[in-house]
Image (cartoon, rainbow, N blue to C red):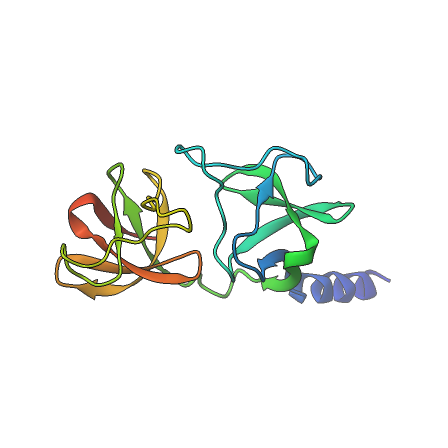
Length: 170
C-alpha cells in the first residue's frame, strides 16, 4: 500500500501545472473595472482608454457573464470574451523563462514616429491628435535604428526616441 501511494505521488508531481491565459484577438479592445459594457474603462494618465495589443496575454482569474476577469499590471479587470480566447500553458520549473526586452517610456508627451527620424511623420489618432504612450508604459521592443527604438504599440509598428526611453530586460 505504501508503495502504491509513493508511485501515485511521484506521478502527480511529474505532471506539469497548467496556467490559463487570456489572449487578446482584437484591436482597440476595452478593459473595464466591472463585467459590463457600462463599466468604467481602464485609462492611462492621459485619461484615454488603455488598449492591450493584439496577441497580449494576461493571467486568467475567472469568468463573469460575457467577460473574462484578468490580471492587468496587478489589478483585476474585465475584458470582453468576444475579442479574446483562453489558452492553457504548462508551467514547469525545468523550463527557464525566456528573457525579453521592452522599451520603457521615461518622459511625458513622447511622440511616436513612422520612420526613425525627428523629421519622420508623427503618429496621430483618428481625430488628428498626437498619440502619446503614458510615462512608465512598457512597449514591445523590435529593434534599434540610430537614435530610435522600433516598437510595437497595440499591433502597430512605430519608432520612439531613445532620448526619452530606456530598454529593460524582463
